[in-house]
Image (cartoon, rainbow, N blue to C red; front, top):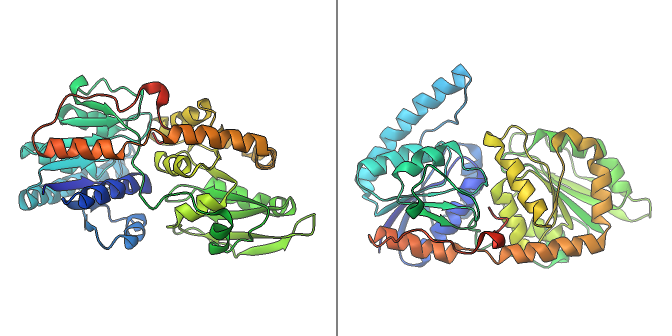
Length: 380
């Protein structure tokens, strides 16, 4: 049995793949401790996983604003002190960080204590934390086809984003009924990522009557702390009952993406990974202020693979027409699903588990691709 510590808090895009790897390692008989942030989204997501061990550490996101920069610096110092004590007390055989503000203190504490450090970058533009920490990492997992000049070539392995075992395609009608939707007609899911998206929420409110009149049911995940409208039910132009459901958070992603014919979503790597796993087409609206513009790169890759469409936030006025043209075009939806299935073949969880076991045992080899770049998964 080996002892692993995973740092994956701050966003669902970090925590979800961390849970996938943690469950895989536990299933192989290893001990896993997961470090998460003190944010509400982390607390909500871990409620479903009482069999995993979580520890909360201090942390705050980076920003050039003087106040935010100062807050980040102080929280990183506190996080490093906490991480140092955690590394000394748990004596892990391997540390894995998923980027973000929770990874840097742990990775540095591990490196200074002689613990092998592995990093996982989900986005097609490596983040600041991964770029900096890659210099001391034993392994850096990158999306297929993505390069990182700061990392030694021997440390790089290309791998898609691990997806939780519970994320599987479910029967459409049963999924709709479980979510409070009618089983008939077309369903549009709107996702703003684990923390919601004000622009997408506002778009839904503005276009809701027109969408329902077109016979399109809507399920909108608004984000924690956002204003939640009441469930709406009305008749479409064809006289069929349709419904719009709003929730602040969704921990039933398998049901949601299985219920939907089409998803309108931000372009976080975690959301894309779950859409790929369940074969659900999407129109992606990249968050224009994402660090290093990584969401635009994620979305562009999906569109290049013929697995979805991209609309910039500045063109949301045209989104309803795009939704209508896509959701009623069964040929196009079938084409998107076919390409999503092709991308899903790049799942690499088992490879990552094997590699982490080797690193923990001191038998890590040089990096190799899990599949050629042309087979790169949109989970990245």
